[in-house]
Every structure is written in structure tokens, then in C-alpha cells.
Length: 165
Image 1 (cartoon, rainbow, N blue to C red):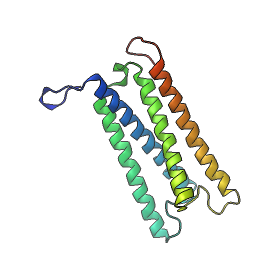
Image 2: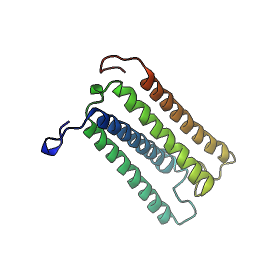
Image 3: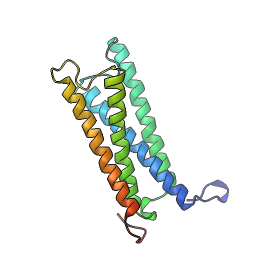
Image 4: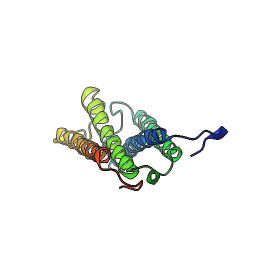
């Protein structure tokens, strides 16, 4: 990809952009799924539960705005990085960092919001609320580990052509 003034991105810069863009896209995607599923469809919780309904809606709005920014920035960086098929093992790179981003969203949000700040739980008021919180963290850990091992396989797989998925 050529930038203004004739400057062109080198291979390493494109690879870093694929990593950053994929991570942000995964992080934002999982945040959006959390908001859509738990906040809107199931209506189990809002970001901040111990406030008025108006405060809950505002906290959810700020949250949704933040994850939308992550999605847009991640997509823009991926667009600038060029087609992942032009990178050796580019698809594995994109998929692995996307999964790492989704998993880290769950782990960070779950640990900080559910356990440290205690501003909400996955399903507050349920007799099994802790099990929902643990399941949320387990899903995050599984997604992270799949991404981590996929990334490692991309890093250690043998040499080959550009299109190595």
C-alpha cells in the first residue's frame, strides 16, 4: 500500500498493523456482542447497575460507543495494512489476534467489572451468579488460548508461499 507522498509501508509495518487491527477488531467485536446479548437482548445487566435506569442507559451508551470506536479503528488499521493474503500466514495472523482480542475483552471486563470494581455481574440476582461470571471468564480464557496457540503455529510453521492459511 502506498501512502501520500510516495511512501510505502514495509512488510514488518504491514504485519504489525495486521496484528493491532485484528486485536482491536476482536476486542471491539466481543464488547459489541456483550452489549448486544447481555445488555440489550437478555437485559441481564448494564455496565453500572447501582444507579437509575437513565444512568444505566448512559453507562451502556458510553460502553457501546467505546467498543464501536475499537471496531472502527481496528477495521481502518486492517484496511491500511493491505490484504492479509499478501502476507505469509496472514490469515492465521488475523484470526489468531482477533481471537486473542475477544478473549482478552472477556478476561479484562470480567475480572475488573465483575470482581474488582463489582459494578455488575453477568446475571445479577441469580442464585448461580458466580457460575455465570466464571463461565464468562472461561469463555474468554478459551478464546485467548485458541488465538495464542494459533498465533504460535503461524509463527513456527514452515516456510512457504505467501498464501499459507
